[in-house]
Amino acid sequence: MSSTSLAVVFEGPEALAVRPLPLLSQADDEVVVDVEWSAISTGTERLLYRGEMPPFPGLSYPLVPGYETVGRVVEPGGANVKVGDRVFVPGANCYGDEVRGLFGGAASRLRIPPAKAIRIEEGLGEQGVMLALAATAEHAVASGEHLPELIVGHGALGRLLARIVVARGGSPTVWEKAPARRAGAEGYGYQVIDPDADERRDYGCVCDASGDPSLIDTLIMRLNKGGEIVLAGFYSERVSFAFPMAFIKEAKLRIASEWAPNDMTSVLTLCTEGRLSLEGLITHRRPYSDAPDAYATAFSNPDCLKMVLDWSNAHD
Image (tube, rainbow, N blue to C red; front, side, top):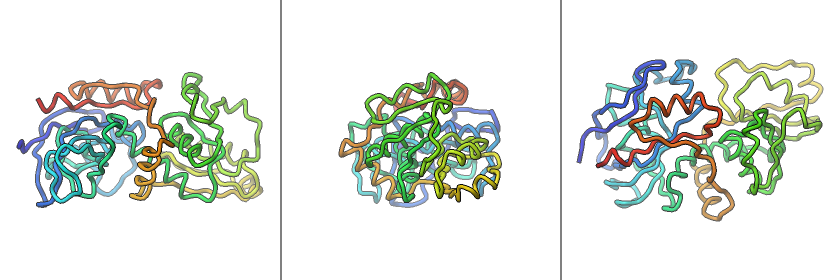
């Protein structure tokens, strides 16, 4: 079996290459996965690509991005999987000292600890790359006392937030300024409107998926007394708000961070039960060899909800 893997490498800010990297084994029980699809995050990975990510421990270039990966098990190692199983992989760190595996999933072959091989239903196919974002949405929804009544942003995360709220018995409103992005709610049990068309001022829970810190004051104005704002996006700029209205509203602010294993379990259950659909979220696809164009499109085209790289030809 090959000891190298083709990988997307951010050599530095706005410098991207696809090149072979050594695939190192660090433990006897590791699982080897041949990647079928990896997805591009327009939040975290865009900041990494542009060199705008705030400093985190372990962050430096060159690095391999990617934490939304689906593939086939070729060596089961110590995991509860078998050869041929389709698994979701939330990143990898298997390339040695030459590059940082942050987050490491955008590659043709991965070596991962058993806990990172999450078996998924065969029928999910490429839609399985959406599981990390779905688990992130589940974490934002399930960790609060109340279901969000208003969701801000109708990108991939906003759509998953709305679908999960509906699956849990809610009926949210979604704000979206871009007319082209207001489509896609049909059949999922929620409505999407322009914020200027919404006169409501008594939301109990607002979940922001926009990543825009300038909206906080506006959202506080829309709360009822004691209402909560959940920050579900990632904010590279300083988050601040005017105190007087927050004081009057007795507003609460909650930050929803990374998903936990129980969030992934919940999402997989919702999918299996048919209560959560991952359809209609992948809008663009490219072969891995077109990675430079794929990343540029994902980061600049507002019509791109989710870009997927196809690695199937990397195993020929």
